[in-house]
Image (cartoon, rainbow, N blue to C red):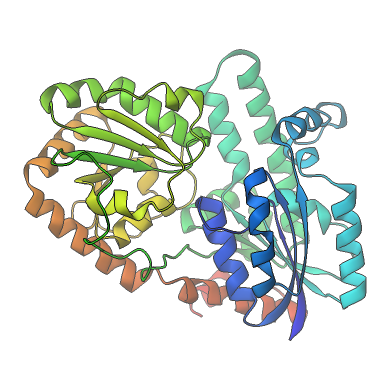
Length: 413
């Protein structure tokens, strides 16, 4: 098996949040064909216990701990150097040395880079072909953040969007292929970096539909007999924080008044203070849970009220795989190949949110039909192996030092 360098900005295990779901499944897929040498960072101390598990997929690994508070302070060096603050946050002399050493020692010719920030470790290495999985257009995310803020933070976020885009464009010029999680993200990047059009590819996420499958026997963690809305996600991630707080402030008062028995569950790790403060008699903030599936299984409806979203929302696909009726914002629905009103519901304004939730809560049989259709869609179109096999084609082209395959050929694989 040929050696392969795989770099990720976060430990790709366990697959318990959006980016880690994709990076883990990519690691597992690559390990079937390559001797994978993994370099990554750990931003939560509790994840260090999972490092030994990497041995089943990796020939070797270099894992470094990042202190998020120190990292944020050090990232301000970017204001002096003129670069995106994301880059010094993930910059490490030890990682740089390890990358050089493992390439030389193992004779590595090809790399898969997960997230643009890790591209700084391979961008200047001659003779190394790289496939960069950007996942989302991160620079556009920062630009969106800038539109939600005022004062110095708005300036800082807009600056990050501009500087990170410049780096993303330069990185894409060195890469064999630039991969994005949806066609919408790929098209957005091409609109911002037209010079990368011939080497920009969409490779969708998948779902482990055997794990995320309807299981009525799972114990019910919700309030017995009460109607329940469930929103899942890492609750320290700004788009999820914004979604939870805006839903509660703008929609929940009217919903709660109309349905006095309805409960809202915010399920996910590390809830930020703004999310913790939402807790009340009928709003439950769980923090980390050992298994999200019981909450999905026993919810009357699953909601994804994101106002800021990039790529494909794993939380939506997982709920669909569980046979849940999901109500999404337009932003959360972006990139998911499913039929609104049939396989999930899409609410693009407050009035539609209120009417859609009321309609589905009043008609559980209709919600069940949508849930069944949602699972069928996942089974037919969202297999991890089917999607990630496109990386094999990209790496085969890199191995033979041929130009990257055009999008039409990769998507036909």
